[in-house]
Length: 379
Image (cartoon, rainbow, N blue to C red; front, side, top):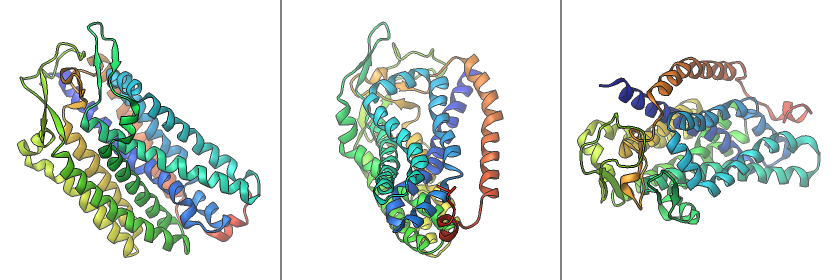
């Protein structure tokens, strides 16, 4: 196998790992923000919930930045096309992501009920909206996105952004992502929180885990009826990075299941997804939040892994001009770029994992309502 092909596959795997960590780590913080008004009935309880993730939320955002950076550098055509296609959606996402750190810093600056309640709603919006958009984006690419290129590579969008936001399958995927985020956030609140936050988080997260399992199963049945994308002729994985003049692609119902039929071992991924959600919910119900958190992480691995396995090698197929859809083979950077990026990734990704693990270890233990309420320097 050519080195260029190996590098393309490696960076597709790296992108999958980054997307999983966005769901697990960023999704956990977003879940806490979404739950803030429901697990905290008093100002001190809400401040306690914020201080549970307060030392870590900005560090976890690194995975979000890495996601954009990996797409930008490893798959530049995908970056340019997706950010253009989902431009309005990206603006909504960025608005909510900007609102979130402002809410962290400003909420406790003024000790009035109205001021803090306003920022509590900001946490709800900035926690739920990004995860809905995250899941909806996955749903959209599974259905194909309306775009095409002219002979000179000029991009054209063929569908309204409203359809990307409001089509039923995308909404289902968005709700699935939100439910998994709430589960992950609830597990963290249980790990570091005490009653009454602990009990409220357990009830909500348990239900969210089961809802996520149901939504994932419904989505799995639904995707079999969706028209997927498949090559009609052999493709050269070492092809030059251009969506023009590639092998013919057609849309077929059930095409997204072809990789699972060809490699039955891939069925382990959706099994991991459902098992992680159900067993994680049972773990939280049994009062084992650490086990539940890790099972939630496994659920994210199964969910993102299932999507990637179904779509391989497609990254962003075109529903209007299927032959111009973006794949791992035709949307990547040069061999030189991918090789140098891999060197830096092998250095910095383990470093990120190490300092993140160290931070959670050092700042472990319960966050008490009394100590937060008497500390003006906390969130």
